[in-house]
Every structure is written in C-alpha cells, then in structure tokens.
Length: 134
Image 1 (spheres, one colour):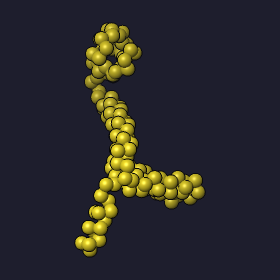
Image 2: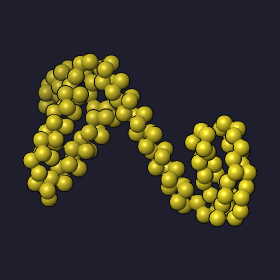
Image 3: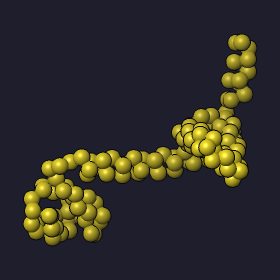
Image 4: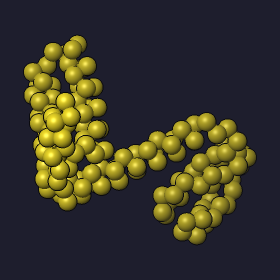
C-alpha cells in the first residue's frame, strides 16, 4: 500500500492538485447530481460531466501558474460575495441602526434609527448627504 501511495505522490508532483476552485466545483457537481436525481435532465447530465472533466483537468494540470491565476480570480469573487452576504445579514439583524448607500461612492452608511431628515457625511468620500429616515 505504501508503494502505491508513493507512486501517487510522485505522479502528483508538479501538478496543481485540489485548490479552492476545485473544491467549489466538486461541491457544485454534487449539488447538480442531487438535483438531477429528481429532474432527470439530459442537459443537466451533460453539464455535470463537463464540470467533472474540467475540475479533473484543473486538478491534474501541470500549468500551476495559470491554475493559480484562475483560483485567485475565484477567491476574489467568493470574498466579494461573502462580504455582500455578511452586510445583508447585518442590515437585517441590526434593529438600532439604519443603513443607507452613499450616492457618490456606493459605500454603506450606518446611521442611528431616528425619524426625520438628517445630514450625514460619507466617511469614505466625504460627500454630504441628506438622508430621510422613517
């Protein structure tokens, strides 16, 4: 068994291996497989096979630099989505503050929940905003 393990390690030397994009694509593959149990779609099956082949190609690819660039692009998108999800969760759970978007730079302003019209200054761009809170 140790011989087989060593041969696999030697085979994988210099290859990309399992990175974050690979793990996410495998997770999407399994989600599609679970959905296909109920849908029985030929198109979904073709997409699943394409995703499986692409993920396997990425894992065994020797062009580590290019796969690394792909993974970094994926991680940037994933981080942006996570940040947006966290902000939405904060906005929904915070009962003491009101969140408004700056019309100039699109940054979120956290304002105390007091009814009326207020003037606020964006901390990011310095723009003065007139904010109406109900």
